[in-house]
Length: 107
Image 1 (cartoon, rainbow, N blue to C red):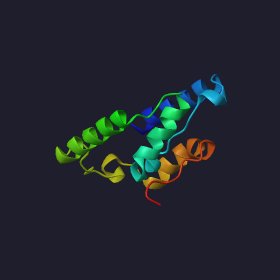
Image 2 (image 1 turned 90 degrees about the vertical axis):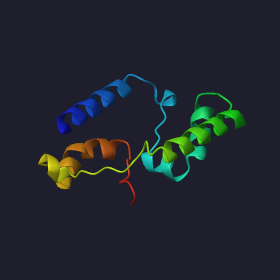
Image 3 (image 1 turned 60 degrees about the vertical axis):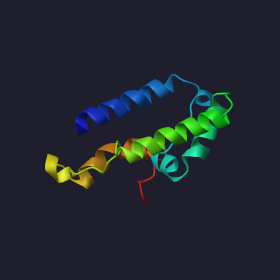
């Protein structure tokens, strides 16, 4: 799986090279967790769309339903379960983290 993720990240990086920077927007996972409404305002603005109260309410309702149904439950596995270490994953994914200023989650 780590091989797949690394290859996918490389392909995404290559694809981004063909797209003007003005047509790209990065959204960090932690930002979405911290303040999803602000992130969605930025996404909609970037796309030239109005972030309407109806859209916000629909997103909020979906999130509340997902939480109540535990669609986003916690993970119950570790890297070690797959014969990996945090250092190995970090080393292999570091080029992408550095290139796009991806922060560590929860830090």
